[in-house]
Amino acid sequence: MAQLTIPPDALRDRHFELFCSLTVDARGRDDAWHAMRVLVDGSQEWQRREDTQPTGRDSLDYRFRRSVPAGRPLRVVASTDVHGARRIGLRITADED
Image 1 (cartoon, helix red, strand yellow):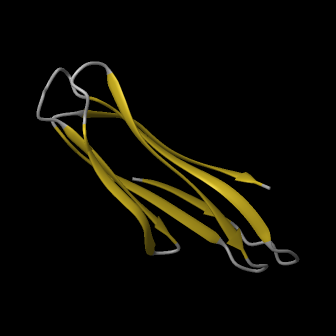
Image 2 (cartoon, rainbow, N blue to C red):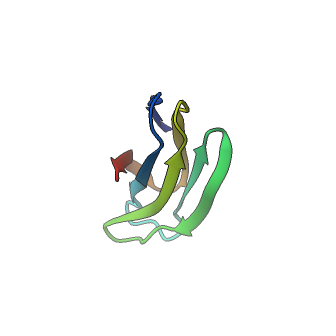
């Protein structure tokens, strides 16, 4: 699980582009799969499960935009599940407009 909490700005609304990325390796297995779920402020934003490519690394990415009113924080949580694969990395990044 990865979590990103952006603290509130008391004076202005803010706008972000967020990117969640999961990287896995199937270790040559044909039955491998990987999944990622993204929560924003406690509510499910997105979820997907995909078969993992048996050769080399594979990834699952989700990019979205979010406006945050003045005085409110933003909390993003990405959780993963894998079968027959090894999780290489999980990250969340945010760019403010």
